[in-house]
Image 1 (cartoon, helix red, strand yellow):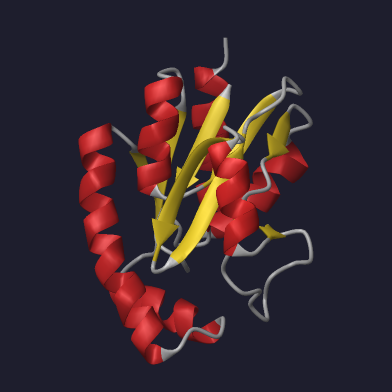
Image 2: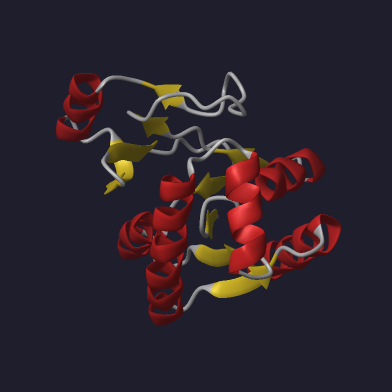
Length: 175
C-alpha cells in the first residue's frame, strides 16, 4: 500500500507523517532525495541531500518512483522495496506520477487552515517573505491539481485530529 501526503510547505505534512509512522508499525516513511539546501529545521535524516549531478545520475538510472522540479530544486522518491506500506511526503505532481504507476495509491492533500496561517508557519520555519509568497501561490495551483486527481483533503488545524483522520483513511484502504 502506498500513502501519498501532498500539500503546501508549512501545512504540517512532516508532523503528520512522523505521527502516522510512529503509531503504525506497518507504515514506513520513504526518504526522498533533494538538491535543495538543508534548512535550519530539517532533521538530519529528512532527505538525502545531494548535488544536481548525483540526482540526475540516479534519475537516469531509473532509481526514482517519481521525481519533480519545484522552485528550482529537484526532489525524487527512490523506488520502493517490499518492506510494508510506504508513506510518501511529496508534491501533487509526484502524486500524479505515483498514481500512474500504482492506481491503488491513497492520495491525501494536507491543507493549512488558511493562507494567513500558512504564511505564519512558512516564515516561522525560516522561509524568506518572497519564498513564502511563492509557496502560497504554488499552493493554489497544487490544490486545484489535487482536486482533479481525486485527492482526499484534510485540514491540519489540529494535529491529532488530522492524524486520526488520515489513519482512518489508511485503515479503510488496506486490503
